[in-house]
Image (cartoon, rainbow, N blue to C red):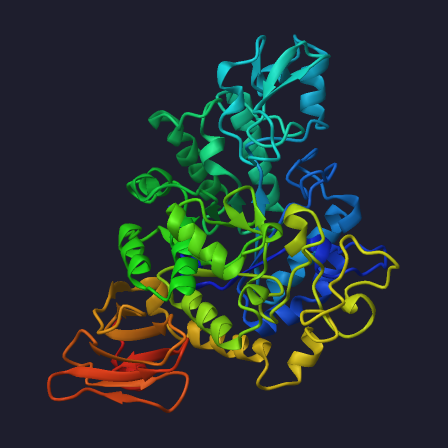
Length: 550
């Protein structure tokens, strides 16, 4: 089992090497550029960076169509550049998580080319084939409206191959022992290169046989096997699963004994966070938090606001989803795949600083580990003139210099946002660094406060009853210390009355200002929260360190 639960209170920062910092002026970010910006990430308070795919790839799906699992795409550098980056990251106290794309390869991968060209090749059975087009070929598409089928005919192979995603991404056959062995080799290789874990892409599809049906129980054993190998090679390495599943299936991925995936992204909470932000009703979010509660000490949720995909709202009811669309993405061009929004957070809130702070404060105080996305700390926007997901994957905005200080090239991998409210002349790191009231400096302060609240990652939590349906109140307890967090989702000021949940909660010390609260004779606290207001309280006063038990 894992011997270091560092991930329980980490601050994870997601970035794409290609769009973060270009060091050689070719318009594409690279590992040397990222290495030069490690000081920025360390100053922000980041403990771990999650890198999107950087392997050799035809780049038809932003690198998720891998053609060599053991290499680095030439546009972002070499293996030597990666090792230099890993060495420098370690000196800054930053761990590295990388995407592990196991569900499929590129159709340009040598394995698939060998499988196509020779029916007798050992690689033929590394993929999933059918002589006839299956009846269910038009079901189970990941990208409805863009993707036409999950089975495509290959003339050279004279057979249909299965692809859960795009047709240029043939699925690997995880039933094949040779494929499983190769997965272990890939994991072992990158652990030797210095990574501390993997964000495992599309986990439900990795363990699922071809077709629209869900995984069989025995297929979950693959997750345990991967975990056992990982922990054998590196005792402190972790697996972070992308698994957008129902709460009844959570333990299938975590494992009853916490022996499968260490962490999972909590998509259900994420979607209900945005419903709460749109409707000002905190009650559905509170219910979903309870439904997704995990108690195994090795298991942990990863909470996020935005990631590198669209904001997926597929788990909401039709009515709830329409409410979010109406509030944050009413125009058809803002929506994607009939289920989500292709937008950044700041423009969704129309630049409203109050709402941005509320959302970030909430993410950092949900029961789990917060995962930030590059550029959100400065309030970057999107470019809806770009296709599909490219709209919110634009280069990082560092300064007011050409191309936002990202690159000196005439043309960048994606256009830098240069005009409007969210253009780099208005939104950039350099200007915000010198402004003590900027979103960037506020985020740094919030991260520092989060690091001083280990109760969130380690402790027991509960939802406190309040007098308002617009306010979510959470309490955490760990080693004789407690913290309480309040968030008002309404635009209107709300006065909320609540009991803090223990005899020693007569005093709630505000961690973000000097506005402390004392309970009345009945042990009730009364707090006035401004519109989109939030509070971070420590139970019993600021001498909590002296009271912490071993």
